[in-house]
Length: 167
Image (cartoon, rainbow, N blue to C red; front, side, top):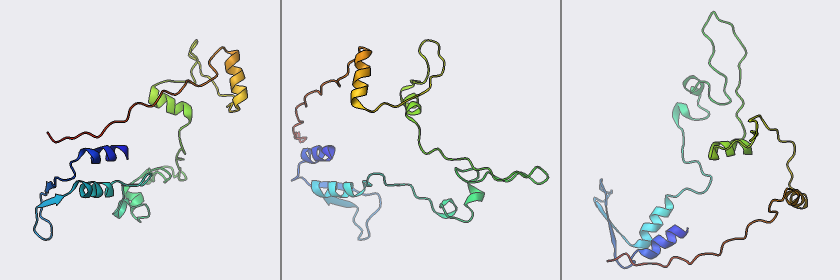
């Protein structure tokens, strides 16, 4: 919202904006004349709400389509295609979809850092416990002579002033 507020503050509200369309509207106009508030209102209507799926599938790609299994074979949670006639007939195998990645896999993916690999020998490490009790964590960190308090927060910088773009 801060970008929209800064953007809205930088527009001259008294100057109308002319938007030229490629195709005419139903009434034949090709140029829309908008104020800054109208433009921002139209743009903000296009922003989807958080966690809203913007991709929709229709036809045979729709989730409940009758022909979907013939078009999208081997998709998550669906049986793999049947083998050709004359071969062995195994039961349908379903690949389980992982619910989410664990923290070690996320760190490895984002930072290319394998936290489950020993720094000395390169062997695999194993997580034996998750410690979330603050006093216990503080005692362990003090024993290891590591900082047990979080770093102080930096002071907030100056707010960006609205500036006039008309030159």
